[in-house]
Length: 219
Image (tube, rainbow, N blue to C red; front, top):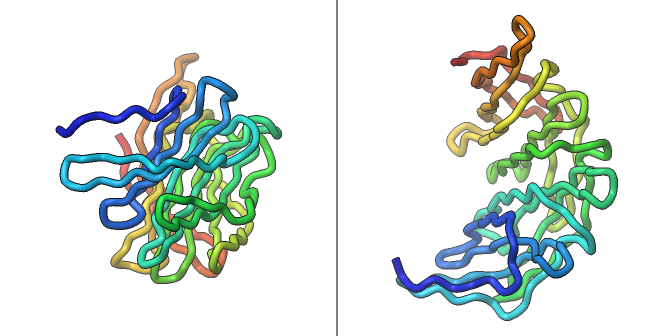
């Protein structure tokens, strides 16, 4: 390993995204105002340098930050939970220029209570992305379409309505447009005890709609 660098005033909730060769975006929230920021990081060999400026995702506390790279562009997708405004789930496009990050308009993919599970994946062949998340009553996913730095969403679909869902991850297949895998942990109450199982489903995107297979693997 090379020498470590310190992110000023950072406290927790780190996420990272590779946006170009040797260039990364890192997210963190601070122990001063608890806002969540983005900052550019450049890697050359084993040397890491940090951009001088930081970009605030939202002027308030947010968490559960996830990234998806948008290949062959200067853009990337950010999804997060807004804990200041009803725990709604939001998405925004970031643009990198040198060491500076600018953000487009924020769009909510869930205006209800988003729980602490969010995953996103981008399909470069169709300019669409998938967001899987847990809300207060169900576990949903929605399809978003990107045009430049603008985002629009289709109608969310419930993928699981059992007792509880955790460890959600979705991944669009880069070799099969409009196809994705969804894995998650689900809980059921059996004889007054909570039992967890791991499940995998295959899905397909059509327009801004989604179809999903039954569970094809579990343990």
